[in-house]
Image (cartoon, rainbow, N blue to C red):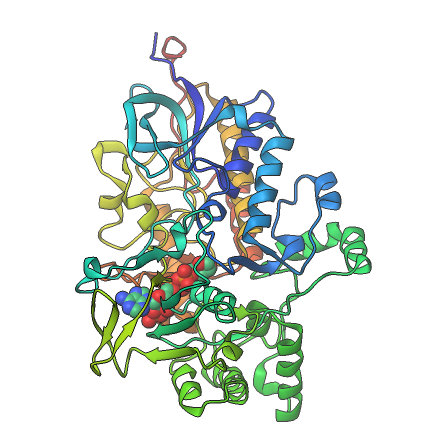
Length: 552
Ligand code: NA7
């Protein structure tokens, strides 16, 4: 008699991906028994940890949610074009309650390691209870699972810069990705290091409220207005009446932001028309809309990119009154990072108490007891220093857990030669029955529709293999992973994104392998890839034989 598993599926992470995966397991006929754990003491994933002022999704509210609960979709309230962190968290808590998922969850529990066991035909996982600070409580225990599904999030391991004298600072240091509950810094003099989408949000939110704010900015970015504001009853009615078409359009689009991407090249219209279209996008708001709804080549063609970049630079100069501050805020690289939007970021610098330090002119030399010292000898004094310095993205979330596949090789070792790779963004060769939600080389889009695509693919695949065998082994071939990686590399090379250095390529963390962490073909093409592969009888997956009856 072969050893039995304790549970069919162990899901790591109770954010959006983990919640939907758990629900899908329980809905299957017959259900997959499942346990979902999270080191956080609440559900929500990213939205549990990122409680910094101004934290919000920059996707329109109506598609920053699950599409599969139609009744809830039509009735759950949202007031503004964008959902803010407390609302997203509230929504996810509501989904867990509505579907009775909590009893299949064990929160405040961390995965220490997982090892593939050939004899078991599953994963031996070591988990442990942790307190609110992440310290282990009690002894670890082993869970034997047929499938291991990681829903760790793209961006969960904080990136802290290594600044000399970090420990000397007597004030408060806080990373945006681990913002303590209830922390209020509005009476403080605040320094913010980092100006990615988090930096832009936190600066915009705090600027009108704090005593003093200085942004320490290494790479000025392009940001456009978000267009946020209350939604009318008529608007909500329109969304509700058109939800099916909205989701259909979203799944059949490239970046899945709910608008139809442009099909016209930038230089195919007159300069006046170009300006008009850019202005219209500026007024409507949203970073992804500005990059992908206006014209079809901003992210791939240098001339088109310059046109968009110059338009935004013109806006920055007209908004920021102080020419020296404006000079510092003007981007110096092309417009090819994750597109940003904001609720008045550039205007924030018109306050006398808000300033920006260009770290390329005057780098940080050290942290002192009182604050931050820059190379011009100025000591900037603060009560609180906020690190909006981003994350050790994607593989960073995996590297802190010991996941060992066949032959005892860890994921970290598997990824060492080329950077994080996968087959179809969900599987890795030699890691049987391991599925990753928003793992490396998945689509670069609005997250919820991609994550739903992956969860649905994973559950369908598990069901399919369960019909073939009572001890299913689902395993991508090395060849398939190599081909997918090559496809992702080519797509990234065709895009201008690879000319900027950001977390998308692992370029934000010293010592990391420079490699694309995304599939740049868009959601529609990604879904087609999955469909074709399934039609091709799960091309790229190794055909394991049926186990003998007495093994089951
Ligand atoms: P990002 O986009 O990685 O931004 C991090 C920012 O921190 C960026 O401006 C970095 O400058 C800056 N940074 C990082 N390290 C340092 C050091 N050592 N010194 C100074 N500045 C530094 O992270 P976010 O949290 O803003 O956003 C991540 C994603 O979360 C976002 O795209 C959304 O999808 C949600 P750099 O640009 O590297 O010069």
